Amino acid sequence: MSTLLITGIADPPRHDFTAAEMSSLRRDGLVRELLPQVWAAASLGDTSELRAVAAKHTIGRALLPRVVVGWASAAWVYGWGTEPCRLEVLIDQSKRTTSTHRAYPHLLIHEVQDPLDRSLSLAGVFVSDPVRTVLDVARHCGDEDARRILVRAFQTPDLIESVQTHIRLGGLYVPQRHRSRMHSRLSRAAKTARLLQRQRAEAPQTDASDQS
Image (tube, rainbow, N blue to C red):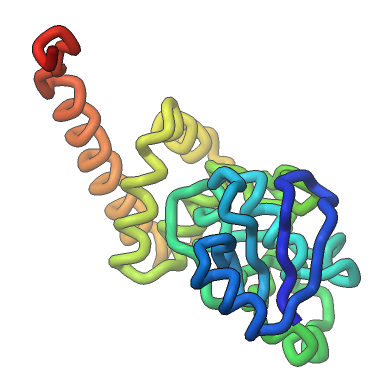
C-alpha cells in the first residue's frame, strides 16, 4: 500500500491507497511521489519539513529512534539533491543490523560512529545538520552527486563559513586517505557557488517600469 500525506505537519493524517489508485491520482495531477510508496498532495508546498515527514514514514516507528537521515538523503531533505531511490540512514555501528537490512527494503543503512553527532530533529525525525551533511557528502558520495549537492548547498547563506570553521576547530575526524579528496571537493564547490552568487548579483535587474 502507498501512503498519501495530505498535510505537512509532523504527525499528519494519512491515507493508504493501492498502486493503481495512486497512479490514477498522479495522472490527474493531484499527487506527487516523494519517496517510494510515500506520496504528497500536489497542493502541499515543497519544503524540508514535508520531505522529513516522508522520511519518517519510510523509516517506520520501530527504527525511528535509532537512526539519523544522512548523506545524500539529508541533502535531499534540505532541498540540495534529488529524491533517493532508497533513503539513507545512519545507525550506530555497534548495533546489530543484519535483520534490519532485510526488514526495510526502502532504506540504505550505513553503520557509523556517533550518528547523532551534529544532528537535529526535523518534523519528528533525526537528520544530520547542514554542516555534517556537507562533510559527509564530500567524503562519501560519487563525484557528480557530490559536486551537484555541494554547489547547491553552498548557496545557503553562511554555510561555507560554518563548514570551514568546523574543520579549523578540529570538529571532524577524517582518515588521511579521505582528506585530500574531501578538501578538493569542498574547495571547488565553494568557488563555483561564489561565482554563481557573484553572477546573479551582477546580472542586470529588469525594471518593472520597462515592461509597461
